[in-house]
Amino acid sequence: MNKPCYTIAVTGLNAIDSPGPGVAVIRGLLEAASFDARIIGLAYESLEPGIYMPNLTHRTYQIPYPTAGTDELMDRLTYIQGRENIDVIIPNFDAELYSFMKLEPKLKQMGIHMFLPTFEQFEERHKVNLTKFGEKYGIDVPLGIAITDQTEIYKHEKELDFPLMVKGKWYDAYIAYNMEQARNYFNKIVAKWGYPVILQKFVHGTEYNVTGLGDGRGNTIAAVPMRKQYITDKGKAWAGISIDDENLLGLTRRFVESTGWRGGFELEMMKSNDGRYFLMEINPRIPAWVYLAVGVGQNIPEALTRLALGEKVGPYTSYEVGKLFIRYAWDMIVDRSEFENYSVNGEL
Amino acid sequence: MKIKHQIAISDTGFLFNPSTGESFTVNPVGAEIINLLRQGFTREQIIDEITGSYAVERNSFEKDLHEFAGIMKMYQLLDKDE
Image 1 (cartoon, rainbow over the protein chains, first blue to last red):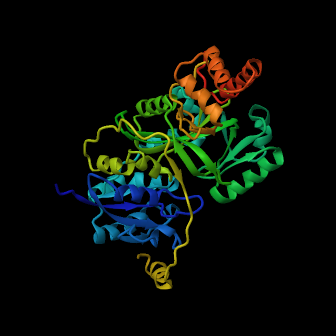
Image 2 (image 1 turned 90 degrees about the horizontal axis):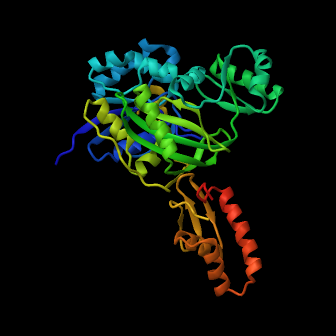
Image 3 (image 1 turned 90 degrees about the vertical axis):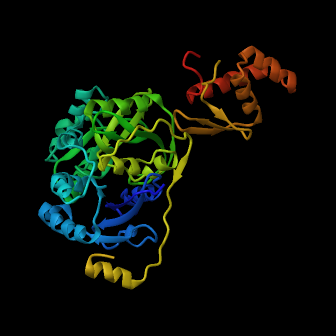
């Protein structure tokens, strides 16, 4: 039987020490059983490794940063669409999702499909609103307070207690063991990501993550939990193992069902020493470690693409437990002309 | 003393708990005890089995088994009612 071939554009090609999910998503798409994929890379920087990796993208285009506004992004995507005839875009950065969500109807008119959370889902799971989110859906969430002035750290010192987490609106999280560290991290985060900064109660325990996919009607299409085995100094999993924990899977299904979640997601959980799970963060997109899910039998990028195209997709019902992913870094040798081509023309 | 049913142990003594993702290595006697537990042996039956097979005093092994069970409990490898 002939498989259809879809042209799928993917962002997040920065396969660096704190990697974007793009390369892992593309690997999933290239291994899809139900279709062939022609991959178009969308990159922000000229040194994102995914641009130059062999047999990954058919072509890669530079796109404007979200701060440039949606008009510029739309202009660029219109140009790219004129050349590539894209069927589906999978955005992979938190910071760009809002722009793509805003452009979703216009892009659909151009024949580009996406499968993103709704604005309401995107906002209510935001770090800034996570405490309220937990209360609304009956999920344990450590107390979190959004602040815009470092003097507020003194105000909340007693209820949060040290150590506490200091988190950026989009990225970055630090453990502060005293007031001086908390103030330093506050300033560091503000300089990079702006206001607000989130102070969150620290939970002692072990980190577990779940990646999954909701169909927007309350059904969990995929869910794979993972225990972080090796963590980088940026808190990113460099190795992890798939696990079978019914509590974690039940919590995931409850999250998808009660929010009607649409799209890929990652739940960052902490299992406290007394065995309770605390939801630390919800990332409204596929995580960088998604290839583990593909490797254990749940191809989330493939299922997401099919949902975006309006196909009926049934839930995955099993996965292999006890499989590890171990990330590695390796050096590519790239001809200067390729770098020049991308830097000057914005495409390669 | 009952070991959680989902705990897997290989011939090399590598033990994996699929619900937490933790793994451990145990020595050959540890592996033997875990395999006996998986077969449903009670504490007394394990003591009989091991002291019958190895040159070890019953009192001494009882103490060792108690300690081993404590470690397994700490790592959540035993059923909760144990």
